[in-house]
Length: 330
Image (cartoon, rainbow, N blue to C red):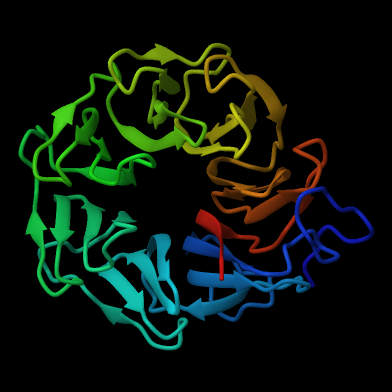
């Protein structure tokens, strides 16, 4: 049995069950690999997991025995499509996870990240070790789009929240930007290589943050024209960044860093939580309607959860798992 947050603790802004989870949506986790036996009640140890409201268990929804890097959904009206980034390509389900099919071919192999155009379900972007690939026909065909990039390896993609024609790609040598839906790219000169993750503040679209492999976190307040280091942060590898729905709160975590918090949009930072059992933090989730509800996914220690903005934490399942992404979906 998994020890989760039990009792009467609740937080404002969202209707929750006894364990703090919203009633109307499920929590999902993308598990990259497993270092030991999952103690969550799940019988399989990698893939796509779900925790339903009121439950204390994570249930494996899909496990093709492949590395799982991330997930996304496209939803409009009654149409709901689930995507998983996996070791042999991009997988999609059109029937709420009951069946899946691989959309990509041998040209892409591992898919590390997916970005979906909110206006057009047929337009899909993926990041791979061999560059950025784009499909405009619902995954039937793919074209590599690398004009302007110096190196192929791309780890993450992000569509601009104010204009989906603008895309950011976390590259091996720099952060790249496209303003024409991925046809052409230009470097933004972050000043550090090996970009691991990129986020955009929901309250300030010109403010971007990147986590790097060996150079901490960098932030821009002018859409990428100039960059600065986050003040107070260690110069470590940072894999997880998450911006809260409030104006300027951002969280960061990485290799032996603990969880850090910024109240000024990434300019300055303070240590929020340290746990000696956690080797690395790979993903951070902040509930969009309740900024006090936090989860972190770790490299082999599963998921931890806080209902009070990070003051107190309890283990929340999937022990032994390397969790790459946590999100809240229908």
